[in-house]
Each structure stands twice: as structure tokens, then as C-alpha cells.
Amino acid sequence: DMLKKISEEDIQRYAHQIILKNIGIDGQKKLLISKVFILGMGGLGSPVSMYLASAGIGNLGIADFDNVELSNLQRQVLFDQKSINKSKVEIAKKKLLLMNPKLKINIYKKKITKINIDKIIKNYDVIVDGSDNFQTKYLINDSCIKNKKTLVSAALRGFEAQITTIKGWVKSENNPCYRCMFPQLNKNNRNENYQDCGIVGGIAGVAGSLQSVEVIKDILGIGKNLVGELIIIDLLLNRFKKIKFKKNKKCTICN
Image (tube, rainbow, N blue to C red; front, side, top):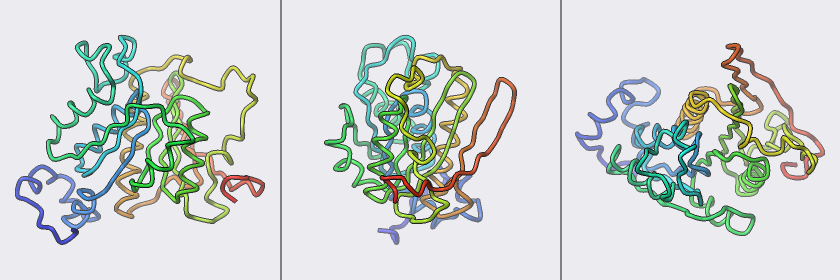
């Protein structure tokens, strides 16, 4: 499959990537046969999917059981006024195919649970977490560790974003999982879910864009990824910081 000739049209479409030394034609071919799964087609899923589709990721899986609501349009840039009350994944598929008709897109219009997650993510190379609650973040983390997948995770709140990468198969003290970084929260903790905390649309765009680049780097094996590191961006005060984490030796998931 890798030896497949790349078309003239593809060379034109991806010219600005192919020209980069660490991508080139071979790197572009890798992207064209890669498979990426995105959980959540909201504030993060919109920019991530748009940039991955544009970059020539060949196969995208997108999961979300919600319909578009008016309040989504402030940050979920894949949707518009006509999308309201329609399925997010169905609208997303249409829009992404307009951007890149050669894409293969699988849609999962259902709640992702312990029962179905393993079966779904087995078929993908890289998993993107665009969910908005800790429960789902733990679920996807645990499944990526179990199935030895790369996970690119992000979270949003107000003017802030956090991004990290977890490699499910790497057994190293420098490769903590999501539970190592964020130990299980008290069930009564009001901050358990942050979908109600308010958000500035642009910060979702920044975080989703960073996630898309992490995914591309992982597929191509280039650069340095965010394993063991959490980037925290506060755009209200323009503060950017990186926190390093070690594996929690008592973590029941990744040890």
C-alpha cells in the first residue's frame, strides 16, 4: 500500500506539507493510509477534524451522539445555522468531505461506553480525545492503555486549554497516563465536568490545532511529542506553561 503512487492532484493539494523535509512524499503517503479516531465533535473535534482532513489523513472515525444546538455555533466551527437539530457526526461528515472528497469517514452516532470502546478504537492508529468530561477522559485513557494506542487529549475551560499525549504501549516512568496526571476525582466535586464552565471559542481552536499537529507528528514519527508533559495555555493573561509528570507507580491502569 505504501508503494502506491501518489496522484498529481494529491501532490498539488498537499504541496505545502510535501515541501517540508521531515514530511516529503513518503510522509504524505503515510498520512494518506493512516487511521485516526476522534471522540467528540464539539469545540475540539471541529478544528481537529478540519485540520486532519485537510492534511490528508486517509481515514477518520468520528463519534458523537449529540445534535447541533444553537449554543454550539459559538465555538464548533464545523457547523452553521442550517446544522441546528441535526446529527453532529452526519453534518461533520458532509462538511469534511466538501473539504477533502477522498477522505474515508466512519461515523459513530452513539454514546461511547466501556462496552463498545475497545472494539471501536482497535481499528485506529491514533485516538483524539475531544470529550468534555472526566468520566469519558478516564474511559478513553484506560482503553488506549489496554489497546496500546497513542492518545492525544485536551481539555478546555474559559480562556484556558490543556494538552497532553499518552502512549499506551510505552512502559516508562516518563510516560504517565491520564489517571496519573489527574487522579480520580471525588464524585461530589462540582468541577468534575467542565462543559458548563464557559469557554471562549478561539481557545478551542488553539487546542484543537495543537492536537492535530501532535497526531501528524505521531503518525510520521517526527519531532518531540507531549508524552509526560502537559501544556497549559491561559490566553486571558497570555501565559504558556509546560508541566512535567512522572508515572504514578501505584496507578492501577498503566502499571
